[in-house]
Image (cartoon, rainbow, N blue to C red; front, side, top):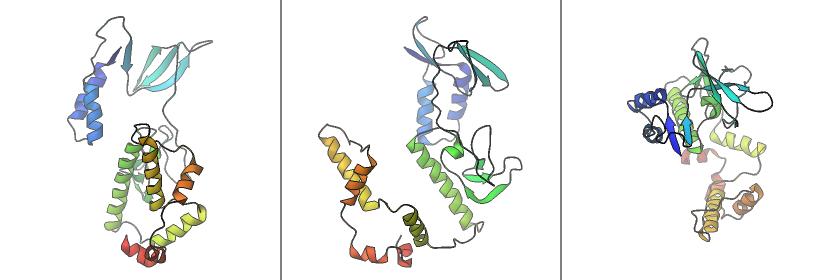
Length: 243
């Protein structure tokens, strides 16, 4: 089995490696750059990565025979007997918010929503996750993605581009509790973490994850309660000062 990439992809990888990249992205590209350009054993099984192609049509009469891809201004057709979709979910538009119908995302610059037709910013509106960049990445990607968006938000606030919040953090806590009474706090999360690690030890694994929400809630409910002084200030203005 050989994993190969075409010369176009190899050139794009080499160009990207010459720029400033986050460590995880650089590591992935460095691994990709080691792939050969053609199969070392002609006739053997080969996995070929083909990037920057958008599925356009599935061809065939009674079964899949080929897939037609849009590649820039050209069209590529690849013979195939099996077609699997694994590209996540497509974003949907929201009222009064710009939307890119082709990519299924909200146009933005580092998380700041902007109107793609005019390039103007949409003040006070920010995005993170797949609606920001499309259905790509994993949990770690979402963390760095959200950090970038929050950084943009804080910069805008510090530069006087945003109005002062109408309420303190305690006001948000009340809204969350009203909408979702069952909340897992920090103590509950620690209890779940400890329980998963304990479950995994018996099997020689780092942890054994819970797959049932009721089971997680039960473990969290049995967690040690925070000290009385923390309960007293929770939801008050003092809570904001201590964060």
